[in-house]
Length: 158
Image 1: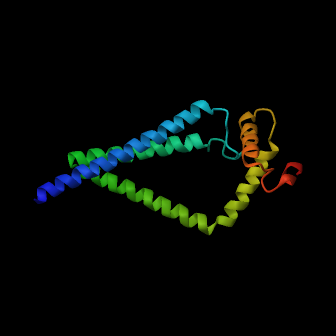
Image 2: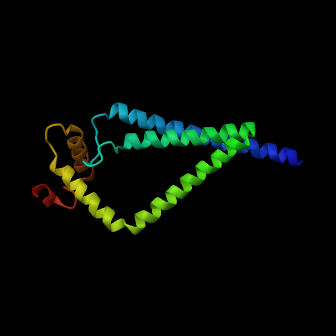
Image 3: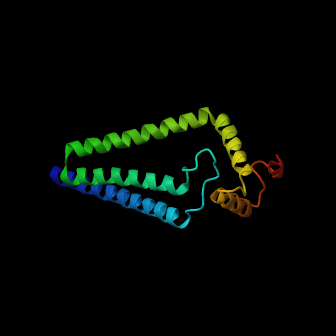
């Protein structure tokens, strides 16, 4: 009876990790698709030009796939080393998320002011030579959200 329950838990853990792995494949695929089709679409941040939605999805998808793969193989083979690695990776992700949440709430005012300054710096680069992606991003934001500037229309005149 107990052996049957352990086999059920083993295959259930394999199934859930397979779903996580497939989800990671999907996120990675969307990231690659965004990078391929929206290559000129840069971020609104002039300080971190490589921090785009496509790059974030690619990194996240790869990381989720790796964790899901380790969990799948560890559950299927009942390998203690792989299961321990899986547990440590999940613990690190949890601690990283908790740390980021605490820092975000502790420094939300500073993050907000920095983001506004960075967006205004990017706004001043609108239409300049070599900033096609940034110009396209601002044009789409202004059109989709029917707004002007970062705070209001006076940002365009600064």
